[in-house]
Image 1 (cartoon, protein in one colour):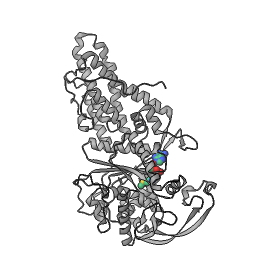
Image 2 (tube, rainbow, N blue to C red):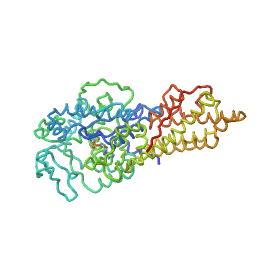
Image 3 (tube, rainbow, N blue to C red):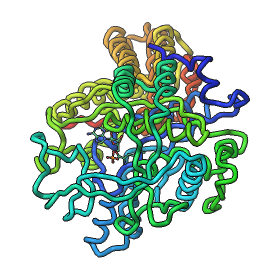
Image 4 (cartoon, rainbow, N blue to C red):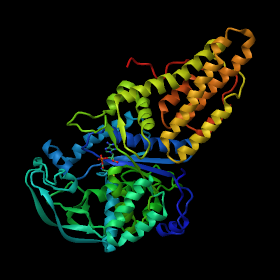
Length: 546
Ligand code: ME8
């Protein structure tokens, strides 16, 4: 189902009418991970789906900007650093290096990596806070909450056990009242409901959109507490208008999506902060000044943080006069063997271990093929191995290996004259792939691509080139078959590039093509030239005893 475009009538409600639509980069983000958490399957999945969407846009010839990063402030980070006898910044720096290595391991092609402790981010957050303060959107009032003295933190409803009590590990939990800064919310409720109703694309999939609307329509929004007293928590961004307080984490974290475009020199993004924002110049801009970044095209997030992104974030932006992002795309959560992943029960999937054993593209393939963006997923080791064996080793791997090996053996690796026997089928899959990619239907794309893999493997069995090779009278027929197979392999490499970039590059290398298969236009049938000599075939996905 195509994602509907913004409705005209609503666009003017969220953007100035003179807002230019040209020269916009496709800008996509992931959530920023808690720096002191363990990188796990959920984080890996979110980064991989975002990477595929960004790569697909680049493959279509669009300039894309992919931002991911880390959420580094807050009580828990401050305490963890203290308990290790480290300064919080040094503690974060060590962990950040691990997260960045994790991203490299996943084959992610991000354009920037934001850390909420960076001066460039802090400057924008403080400017936003100053503007909201100047407009009267913030006020100070007593905050009442359940406080764990042992852990020195307020607990939330999420911390309660099913019976409503708090776990004894929190120590003594008492109601505490302290002064804090609040952000006025309720007046924003009517326009936000109208906006989400008029813009079905804003929260996707529809089930999540309905959930947000249900939430907004069933209650009056409470004002959002955006501070903590610096005396109690100093690991945060100081409120510029009241230095006795630091900004409490969600306001800080959400702002990363906007702070980076501003810090990188997107002048139009920064315009709403005129008079409040002073660039830090900590990083010279590498952006093409002709291309705007903000507003974000897609925020990819998990289902547990929808409310922050689809309720608080648009309200923060609207209140500060900043255009809203176009879409919040919500993915489901992974379980392992039908259970919540948890270190205590030991049922966690370690993406790095899987990648070390099976290769990064096998990992990417499984998560993308197994789980559509939206529902929850279930990782099983047996399912992983079975997809590896059936779809990668015996499906794609076998097709490429036997096609190129036969071309090598029967024609010395020289591509015969063009033949179009599989052209129609391949062209149909190319068109479907493009359309599904434009709708972010990544699982369906892989199903479509594998229909071509299956068709080509069936074609080998039907045409039996190994028999044709034995009969000199069949030389022309063998040429036709070998051309079709080599060309299908090449087209597949182009289609697969956003998903399995390493595998796509290997197929191109085995075909001895110098380019990278990163341009969708190259999926046009017939671009493989007659007379071209291919390289050495090698198994893409070695079969394993499983
Ligand atoms: O929430 N399956 O950070 P985080 C799939 N810092 N996705 C999962 C998952 C699972 N089992 N577990 C977590 C935060 N995620 C905040 C975000 S954004 C301004 C601030 C997803 O490290 C989760 O839904 O707890 C979220 O999108 C991302 O991982 C980071 O989670």
